[in-house]
Amino acid sequence: MKVLHVIPGLSAAQGGLQGALLNLCRAQQASGITPVIAALHEDSTPDAAFHQFEVHLFDCTFRPTGASREMKAWLRQHSGQYGAVIAHSLWRDPLLYAAATPSPLLVVAHGMLDPEALGHRAWRKQWRLRMKLPDVLKRATVIYTCAAEQQRAQAGPGGLARASAVIPLCVDVPAQPPAPAPGGPIVSLGRIHPRKGTLEWVRALCLLAQQGTGFTAVHAGPVEDRRYARQVHAAAEPLQGRLVFKGALPYGHAQALLAGARMVVAPCAVAENFGMVIAEAMANARPVVAGRRGLIVPELEAAGAVIGADHEPQAYAAAMRDVLAAPRTAMRGHQYAMQHYADSVVGGLWRKLCGTAG
Image (spheres, rainbow, N blue to C red):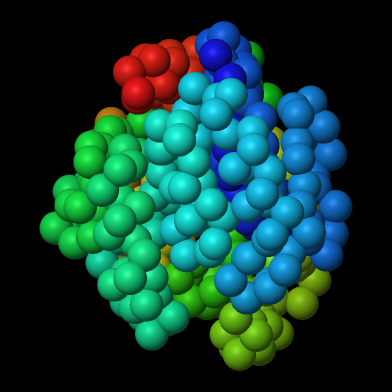
């Protein structure tokens, strides 16, 4: 079976969306599904990790909406040869092109139907919510990454969908994870944006430094909110020599950074649907401190797979200090990832879903 993924772009600037698609394609391929990708050209080239798949890139006619005459025409001509078309963005025109094809339509929500996400820049979404999204969802099966995301979304526009399913994101889970890195940095991966809680993490690091705790730290991820980034960098001034900002990294470099981390911190500021970085850190058997606002964090905390913290600098600082003193949760996190997020597990769920999508 061949499936077609439709996504706005494949560069590192896509952040978690890009990594989620890459791992999903790997899982589908391992389960006997052939994934093909249709994406828009961006200012940068696609991550080299996508070279293993068939990728079709199209020029963008109008960048703010992701309009592309080339993509629209190509989908109209070729989409019928796929067992399913899987759309990965709700707010740009490629979703509309995917919805106009005759193939069964699957829409991966990626947290975009959550009430908090709908409230962010709401004026930009209102037209599509009212005029376009209802018709799309009525013929689509919407895929959520955890039960909490599904429950929250179905109270709003997500409830219009023809059907829905819960399939977690997948990560590469090595049978033998990397050895512990006691001298490695504290790592946080994510866009520099208020939703990601970067400022609270930086302030927590400042508290650790004031208490005389020894550490180095690295943040990797693109700047999405410039005003917020200025606040983050201003707060980080006392940490010169201790904290490095690396910007957006290619997928392989980001994974190497996680593998060499002493611990990974995911300071969720909002009801984030899954937390790809959390799952990747668990797969690498790294201790994880995660904000409890993340929808999947209470489940992982109850399983002993991560250390949860309230979303404030003092709580993150206390949790990080505890891990530095006595690393915990690493192997439990790896075992949980192996049972729930490995290619064979997630790929099997997608194969079953794609087999019944029509």
